[in-house]
Length: 179
Image (cartoon, rainbow, N blue to C red):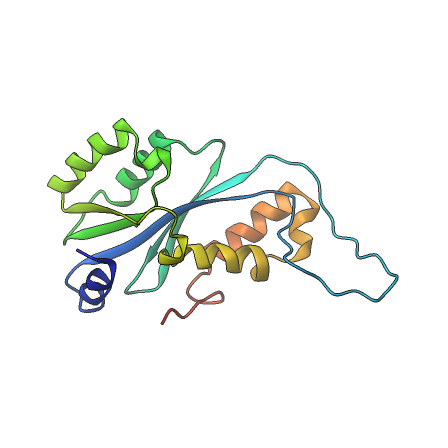
C-alpha cells in the first residue's frame, strides 16, 4: 500500500495509521534566525547537556500524538519495547510508517516485524531520504522552532518540563492542521 491510500483508509476508519519518529532535544536551542538591532548582540542561553530523546507516534486520522521521553540512547531494543507497549491490544489493521534509520532496519527489528504482522501491526518504510513524507517531522519542527520558549534552555529541568507540557497538550493547546 502507498501512504496516500493508507491516509484515505485511516480517514474512513478502515485502518489505524501512525507516523513514527525519534527526535532529540538538548540545551542548545534551535534558532533558525533572529532579528536584532544593528550593533547589538542577541544573547541566547545555551550550554552543553545530555539529550532528551522523544519517541513519537502521530495518529493520522485523529491528529493525536503518543510519545515517550527517553533518558539515554535510543536503539532498536528501545523502539521495539515502545511499540510493544503502545500496541499491546490492536483491534484493527494498524500501520506504522517510519524512516530507514539503521535501528529500524536491524535484524532484531525485522524479526519483530514478523511477530507484529501476526497481531495486525504492519510497518511501512518511507523511501530513503524523504523526511518530508513523515508528518511527525513537522511536529518536531514546531516544537523546536516555535513552541519551546527560550526559557526552556536555561536548564535541563526547564527543557524537560516544557517539552513534557507540549507533548501532553498536543491536539489541544498545540496543534498542526495537516492538509
